[in-house]
Structure formats: structure tokens, C-alpha cells
Image (cartoon, rainbow over all chains, first blue to last red; front, side):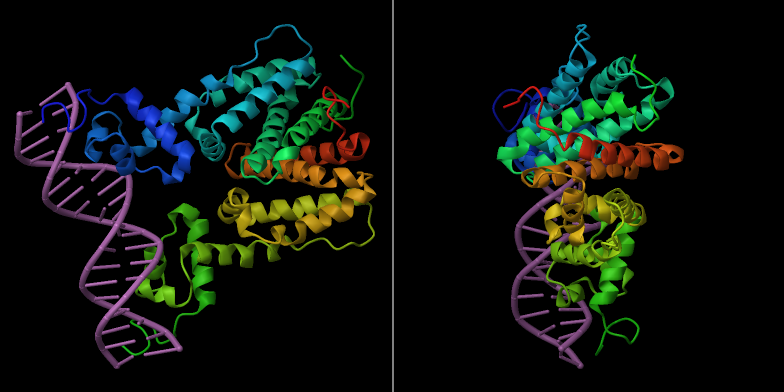
Length: 194
Length: 194
DNA sequence: ACCTGAACACCGTTCAAGT
DNA sequence: ACCTGAACACCGTTCAAGT
């Protein structure tokens, strides 16, 4: 046929991306195949390659298009850094819960997202000075905080944490981090507050 | 031939497991294929199925055989709980650094290891009472602690943390956890209070 | 008992050919 | 410009056949 073997409309990258996301969330990234995706779109498997370079690039585009924007970064609204950190933590969890399969993939392939996870690091670096973390410790502190939070979210995503305790567990962890952050200044013998 | 197309010796599960581990650490779990493993062993791909049920089961056996024993759980030697927690954290990191590919797989497929990661949880539950964590909060606390530590180790495994800062970062995190554990007793979420 | 070749139902991707 | 079928080099796994 002239345009395609399916309904009149030609293939769009948008259509490819959204269908790929749906399949990924339905069965995990590892269950996505170009051939299944093509079948879902009622199209020949090879037609996809006219719109995306390859499978890796497709997954990367799905990540970039759906992870970063979703974070909806809390703006610097002048609230105390504790509240801003809570807001960031909740946005990050919302992402993990809304698109768990995609989030898991990004968690294990952080290189697909540059700059790092849509400004998440910008927000951290805005918060840390207010929390009294000395400048030379901020990169390390950011890594620890992100490792903490994403480790906990993976445990939740995997069902490792019972659903009825997940909210409470997450709040517990965030509060522990918030209290520990300025008190210990990530384990530095602390002078007095800001 | 009678015994095999390769050197006289017949295939052993031991040989299969150790070769699988080597391939996994060389290229990640996702790069292991039954056909490549067979090639590495100079044997027909189908011969493997006489010794292992399938690929999933093989990976599970490699995990069980190499992760749990490696932990070398610190015994209850009467030292302060802080020291015991440090010893556990270091054993866990040693595992992640010695077999990063296998550790990453287990991190994302915790169900393959039952009972959970070779008594790691037993040690945690031995430590928490000494740290003053009330009984009804111990499961939640254990999940948070494990989430924290494994999240940080994944960041290190992925190279997300610069190598020359990794030691210091890990120590920093462990000390923060040790100080935060009894002080806050994994405190109840502040904003959600009773 | 242990090994094997052929076969089946899948993959991602290339390439020349169709409209 | 966009789509397609055939083909290539891979997968995991089954099964009947070999020694």
C-alpha cells in the first residue's frame, strides 16, 4: 500500500513513544521488543526504523520525554529548606510510583538522562547551603541523599516494603534525612547552626 | 562421541556455575546466554540442560552460591552494636565490589535469595534492639537501612560516585546512619504525627 | 547416563525493493 | 517520503535420536 498496511494515518514518533511507554509499564523495559511494538501499532517491524534510530535510542527518548518533565520541580518559593526537600522527595516518589518500570530502568541506567534527572540536582544544590552543608561536601552529600532515597524507592517498587507501610516508611526516612543533614553535616564535627 | 565433544571430563554443575559467574562478571547478567556459556565450555548448548533446569534457575544458583556465603556475617562477638553495624556494612560493600554484576542483579531481583541475603536481616535484627529501636518499628527500620545502603552501593557500582571519594562517601553514610538510628529511633513522620 | 542436531518460536537490524 | 519482505545473526528451549 501507499501509506501503510494499517489505518490511513502514517506513523508518528509521538505515537511510537507513547505506545512504547505503555508496553514498558505493562511488562517492564526488558519485555519491550521492536516486533511487539510494531504489532501493537499494526505496522511492519521495519517501519519503526524510519522514525527511531534503534531500540536503545527509542528507550532513551521515552525516558527523556517522561521522566524529567514529570518531576515537576518544586520552585524556590522561599519556604524553609526542610519543606523544599520534602517536596522534592515527594515529587521523586510520585515519579517512581506513576512509572515504576521506566523509573527502575533509569535507576539502573542513570547515563540515559543528562543533565541529571531534570534538575533534581539543581534543587539539591539549592537546598544544601540552606541546610548548612559546607561547600566542599555538597557533591558527596548529594550522592548520599540520592542513593538513600532511590534505594528506598527501589525497595518499594519491587514490593519489598509492604504496601500499607510504604507511606510511613518513606516519611520516616525523609524525616531522618532532614534531621540528620544539618545536625551531622554528613558526619563532620559540627559547628553551630547557620 | 561417548562422553562429549570436548576434553575427556564430563560437565559438572560446579564448572557450569563458575564459568557462568565469570561471564556474568565480565559482561553483566544480561550478556549471559546459554549458547555463549556452552561455547565457553566447549560443549553443545543443549548439554547444559542436562545439568540445570533453565537459564533462570542457573542464575539463581549462581546467586545463592556466591552472594550469601560471601557476606561472611559478622558474629555476635559482644562488641557495641555500632561496631557490628559497621562490620555488616563493610561486608555488604565488599560483596558489591567483588561481584558487582551479580550484586546488581540481586539488588534488582531480591526474590532470588531466600531467606533474605544470607542472614543479613538476622544481623540487623540482632543489632536494632541494642540500638534502642522499638520492636514495632524494626521491620520498617530494617527496610530503610537496607534501602539506604544498597542505594548508595548501586550508585557506586554504576560509577556514579567518583572512585577517589567512594570510601569516604560510604563511611560518611554509615556514620550518619549510626548516629541517626538511636537518636531518632526512626522517628515517626513529623508532619503526619498521631 | 550423558550428549547431540534439528527444529520452533522468538530477538534486533540491514538492505534492496516496492508505492 | 514512507513502508515492506526477505534475510542474517542471534536468542531459550523441546524433543527425538545417538553412544
